Length: 241
Image (spheres, rainbow, N blue to C red):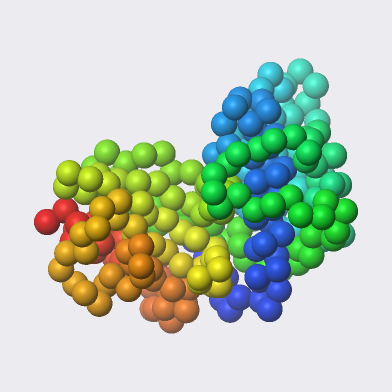
């Protein structure tokens, strides 16, 4: 993974993010669910991945626009598919998942859509998305080593963000890195308290669910990593006091 930010975002960012979100849910999460009945993913160099699972220690991952399936068990093998010229049906077939099978990954799960339509994934934007998840992961790693009772950092396929939750006072708060969504089309970091309290700094709590630090603010900072860590720490400090 890398601590570099994608700056600026390519014009193909939004379409690629939407396409890779479908791949995360309906290819990677479906495959991991079939093997171990879990759906959580991880950031990986250039993209995102399933943790190794099953008797063949299988990993399914993206690297830029490439979808890769690696097996390191008795029948070690690697196969790959360029998603830039592929459909969701092509990706599902490569990793042996059934797109027609029921899947409940949460209320933000994107629909399968037309499995035979091109995914519209651009390699430059896909690498930028991988860089964003890598950046967010290193920031979260720096937070959880000092946070109280943090959960495991995961890339949740239904939300398509990297995050965890930490203890704050008598409740908890979500912290994470999103590549964007309907409300915020560009990437952002966030702190989302589980309760309704928004103590202290009114300017900090700038979103309905808590606080966000936008991608544009990060790339304008002299030290984006330090700025990101300070943003998350400030929210946790406010909620803990």
